Image (cartoon, rainbow over the protein chains, first blue to last red):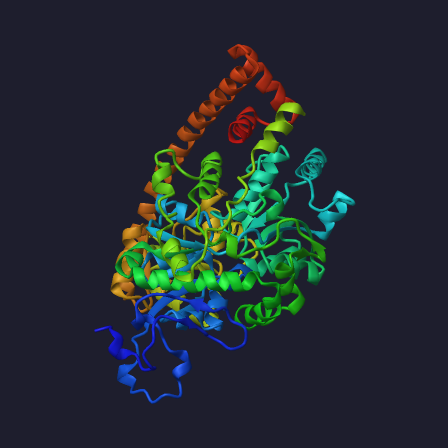
Length: 411
Length: 199
């Protein structure tokens, strides 16, 4: 029953929508007319029954800076603009978010890049099919070390070299001291695999020379301050928060390990995306538009406000702003958090995470590449991008590997 | 740690570690568990070192709320192959029947909904433990076999790489690999992985 009859404004063709007068992005969405919600027609008399039917999409996220495209899409009215009603729920843990997506309590979620691989392979007992509609960001995690560890390292240039860290670990082992405990935010996370890669590059075996553990992001700063962990790799704002508390020093960012590495993804329950591709595409269009808005330097202050209001009410503005400014403890990063160019999901990039998961024995050999990487599809992104007249983002640099060959062969 | 005097009832007492950050809910769940012949050996909330806690309390099974923030740490214990993994039983305050079905189909060992009759809870927990142990034994067997095989395959590939790159014979390629590993204080398979990955 969805047709032009539901429209209330004067008849006109597809047109740009102005979701907000205060600088939100303009969404040009050519499409069936009945999808357009005339937000500017609030004053017009409008019988309730004739309103366009908004569908409700249940979307979950973990409070982190790179959930910004989802939070901004909602705060800027972009979901309304594409005719979607979205309930956006903050989830207390990655495991809870994953389970709710897998068990049908959520339609879509902000996931760690390696999580769809873990889900496809049924790694922790939970098996589910998800479809990735968009990347939510590139870079944006820090490796933060305790003050004592930073002191032991002496003065080090930023980013800290893997070899310097490895030398310290070996000195400690030679002195008979217990292995360092380093936390990541989830076993199947970009954090875990980038950190492992960096440690191995320094010649360490992450499973023998160190103790890797899991600590949820909001707790990492406190655990570091209390000496329960010696360092962590976590998404912002938690590295900047730990530094602001005086609990530790940011030694490097994840972008220093793999510049412009893909980070979180927007994943749909595949059953939902198949049943309602229209909503999945509309949601993705709103998220791409939000990502573009976030990359505009002029919008940074407003982005920080949104995150503070929706995710980190207790944190200082400057701790949240660092990621948007592309700095760590005031110093500029080579590969800072970026949103828009990371929105196109790329299977060849995800393949790097799969290789790492195989390397550390986390994915059984029986799980094929095609099964593990099946969630990475570009159809939804392309359909959404076509509505926004978005061009394909430039291809990112390849994953790290060749410098390593050089260092191994010519050292 | 004594498990109390319930043993003489015939049914074995199950030692449960309850992870819950909400004290009120934890108390209610504990009451429910005790009624089914389980002993709650500890209630952990935002615990520092869950792994140590599990070991110290001798818990056989962990019961945790679906929405508890400690869940990622529990996953970490299991997935990072650290120490002694335990079956984790999730409970939710409310869940639609189809969600529970989906959870079980997805492989979660058990999904307990608050308000479930105590008589039904005990068998659910026992089944969860049995399933977990069977799965764990299989997994360990597979992991050992896989590790050996993977390491051998990696070393073979790294050798092949060096042979073609430097026109070496197989024994020379192996010597070179061994020297590179020794120079860097690495195990040979780790160095092989680095070489293969870099290729």
